[in-house]
Length: 292
Image 1 (cartoon, rainbow, N blue to C red):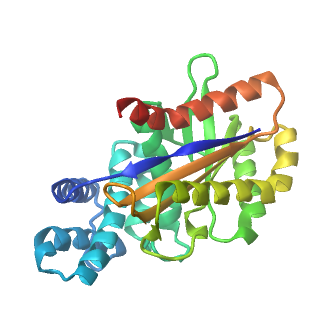
Image 2: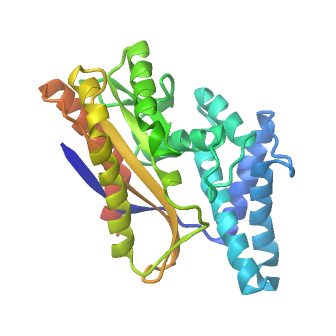
């Protein structure tokens, strides 16, 4: 079973909202003893937001674009952190972000970027009004009174050579903690390193993201089959986010996500869990579509 989800705009903000978000997050982190020093990677990104808000009119086009795109990374991170600030279980993930390389436009492995995948998925469920909290293996969501709690092992992929090991590690986590669940892969860092993917149309972008997700599932299905057939996990979720500069979108620069899912489970209970999980994951997208 394979399912592909329509692209969803993940983040659009203006200057005032950006500054307000950064100030809120910096204040909240300081209250938890996690200050963003100017010398840190996150502190540097937050400084980009201030520079853009205070000096945007004085920057030439080249510097404005570079500053804007880096500031966009900062807001993406800040929104992920802010969504989980009141969850005690998120403290470790947030600490990893404040103390790691958080340059999203490079392909450097980072425990902070690993944590951002957890935080962004957490935020997605929160926006969809799905009960979610940080707990082993990484996240736990509620599928309702009938199906109960469902576990998500989050794996960020930097190299296709590590997929099999990452999948096995995630399955081992599910077995250890005894909840049914899925492995959720993030493929952002399989795209070539760039501050923004420049592309002509939204349709072309959607095709590119969908193709990456589908190929990842197709090429690695053999790794997934045995564990899923043995009931170790119910399936996989694959998600790719990219900052893109799309000529026919307004505004043209957005952070856009596309996802796909796969399972080979045939037991009705497992299929019910997996399908309800996907409905919960997609609820934020459906809400956005209904409001348009």
